Image (cartoon, rainbow, N blue to C red; front, top):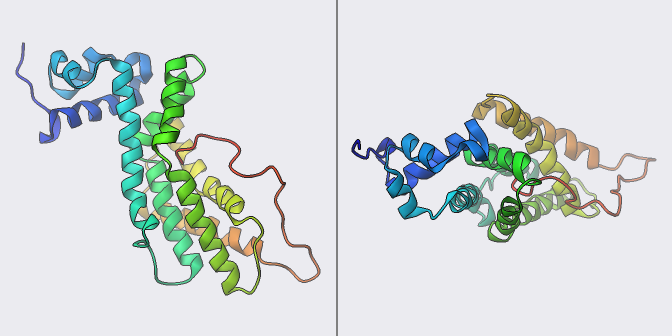
Length: 234
């Protein structure tokens, strides 16, 4: 047996998770065997099983890692350390750029690909997905942050906004979902500059559409619109 060589000089557990993410992206859940993960990570199969009892436990760890990555990127936004200067519109761009970057990360894309392929075929995958919604409550929090910024924008421009969090969920979908789709179906890798320009354009079109126009009724949302569809890790 060849000696163990954890990848990139990181700890063995991190190397295993990195390898699992890459193989999930390349081959899906069925193709990410424990043997393949061990070989790709440069460790023995025994080492993989020392950290993860089976492939499902390894997959759950990948989900948690994606959630932790999202939490790390959103932490400054939740605790007031994000883009504080400038207008509410500028701060919206900063928050949504960070959220879109997190949702289009490698771990998140691997997670979405497996969800799409497996969630209706495997009960254990569906259960892992549902548990991740309990363990990773960041999306409701980020929607609340966006909703507060939309209220700030409305205040700056002298109007009120109906159901700001419902509008926030719509704006989050508009900024992040297209990028995620491109990442899911191709090798597209968006640059930081293009990502910010993309988000900035959508935000500026969106918020201007909220402003009341003389002689026209204010835009309203259908009463059932909240956060009604799509995977929650956005």
